[in-house]
Amino acid sequence: DIIQRTFSVRLLYRFLPESPKKVPLVSSAVGSASSAGRCAALAPVVPGGNPSCWRGGFGFEKCCIGGPEGGPDHSCWDSFFTFERCCSMETVRHYTNLDFEDAAAASPHYDLKHLSRGNEPRLGPVQDDEALLLFSIARVMRPKTIVEFGTSNGFSAMNWMHAIADDPEARVYSYDILPYPTAQTLEDADARFVFYQKSQADFEPADVDFRPVDIAFFDAGHLLEYSLKAFERLLTSLGPVSIVAVHDTGLHVLDHGSGAPEDEEGQPFSEETCKSRAGGAKRCRAFSGCGRVSPDHG
Image 1 (cartoon, rainbow, N blue to C red):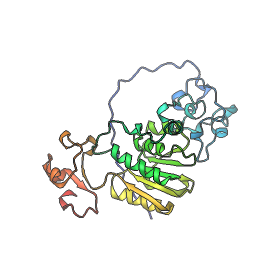
Image 2: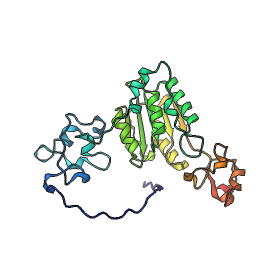
Image 3: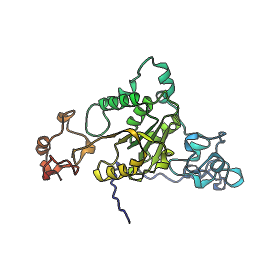
C-alpha cells in the first residue's frame, strides 16, 4: 500500500541584497568537503574526527581520509554533516552550560538553573513547570533511552540531558524535520545525544540501536494523525514500564505560532476564549477525538 503524508512547515524569511561574486583565491581543483569551502584549502584533519558524526555506515576512515589522494569523501557531506564539523572540527563549539557531566558532579543535589530561561506559560514550547515535571519523572525512572519527537530550539532536549547527566549509559534521541543548529551543538557537546533529521512518522527501532524506549515525548507535528502514526511505529520499541508524554493537545488557535495575546498568557484556553477571538470559533480547532468540543472547532 502507498501511504501519503502531508507535512506543513512554517518558514520565516527575508530578502537579502545579492552580493557581488568574489574571485576565488585558490583553484577549485584543491577540492573541499562542503559546498561552503570549495575554494579554500582544507584545514588539517583531527585524528578520529567528531564522534557525533559517525553512524549509519559513515566513519572517519571513509569520510575524512577515504577520498581521492587520501582526502575527504565528498559523498559523506550535506548541510548538517560537513568536513568542517566532522573532520577538521573547525565549527565545533563547546559551551560550559552544555557540559552535563560536570554540572551533575558539581551539584550536591539538583541543579535546575537550566529551567530559568524566562519561559513563561504560553502556547507552543515546553514551559518551565512542564520541564520540571519531565525532569522529575526522568530522575525517578532513571531511563536508559529517551526518544523525543520535536527538537526545535532544544529546550526539552537540554532538560533530558540534565536529567540523565550522571548516567553514562543513558541516551537521548531527538527527531525533527528541520536541521536546527541547537541539535548540532548538542550532538557535539555530548555523545549521548543523537539527532535525526526525519519525521516522527518515520521512526525505526534501528535508530535507537533497538534499545527499549523508557520515555517517549511527542512534541513535533501537532496533528493527531502524525502522532498516531509515530506511536504505531514506536509501540514495539516501548519497554514494559515506559512513560509516553504528549505535549500540545486539545484546543488550539490556528495561528498558534504567534503565541497567545498578552492578556491570555498563562490562562487555560477554552471554547469561550476561542469564540471571543477575532474570527470567532472558526479561528480555533480541536484535534479529532476531543469529544467535548463542538463541531464548530473542526
